[in-house]
Length: 122
Length: 122
Length: 122
Length: 122
Image (cartoon, chains in turn cyan, purple, red, brown):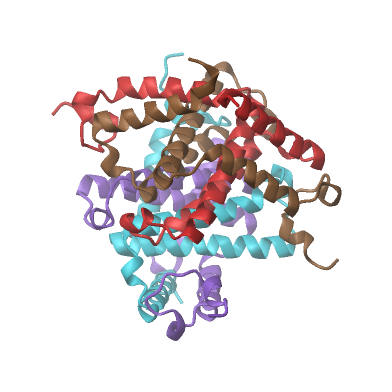
């Protein structure tokens, strides 16, 4: 199956899920954005007390829980994209191009300063 | 680009972006989860003062800004998935199946109560 | 009791809570900021499917749950302030003064446009 | 200002700020919860690429920026409390008491496991 077909199936499944439950009435962009934010909150709780190093070596049980939260984040992001008629993959490619112009590799290499800081006279 | 590998190309582009800037050193799951959360915060700011109805009728300018934030959310989610070796699309399909069992359509139709509330004796 | 004394007691109680559990080791600003974000995620989940009008008329049970989440947000905010040696009340007064300059009342009355939008030539 | 009523004065200032701008119309609990979440997103962006150790040694410039974001978080939390008629300090004391029962010191000392994990048979 091509990625395009996989993503289409996923979109269709998500749409059907809401239709079957008559939940579409709740799925306006404002609400979906809140639901997305709530799921990210659940995701962040898994990492809040871990050191960066521990976050790279999750137990199987923890990874399964984290994966489920990531899926929830992704599902609400897709649902929001459906409602706004946004193609997430296209938008992502476009954003990488924008970011590449904002943060030229030769200028920012190895630094995590936000791009605006590079615009200050030094 | 063929349809087959849009997601693979997106993953590769994102990976290369970090390598070119030597930013991989910052991309542990804990940090990426925070970055994801920060982008969701930027997304939510676009919707916070809108009514639900207004959120369904964004101006072209607003939609472009919202799309860019959604792309940022998606990119950090993909990056996190890369670091944890998670297939987002598989995880999403699996989560829909889990949710379908948690929220049987005939039981929850038209209600937004959280599934735990359905487990209470009535 | 004066407000200053109440806040001092609250700070002391929170500090003692962490000391008693040997949790201070986890309470660096990065981690506390994540914990704060996680609690806000739990708060937002209570409101995500409500209309703005419904959010103004919470049931007693819902209000109790929301209050508990707000307390969690406040506690982590205080804890972060302790670690960064920030006086939250002073900072809040200062921020109101800054905001008053950014958003002059006569200019922004009744509009929720972000202040940057007022800076654009019209 | 006397110590007695610092919090009351802060509440009044915040209320007046909204009245002067006719912004009260936007300040329902749902919207305020989103605004709170957006500010936490801005706060988290300051910490996302820092190590835990770096987060404990912020530069003066960074600390000033972080303090301003914490003030924004606090202001929206107070505003939300106003609208829901919640006394934040009372709620915080009450939550500490609840947490003390959930996480008995002698049982959880030095561990960051979430309290639910302690309920599992070991």
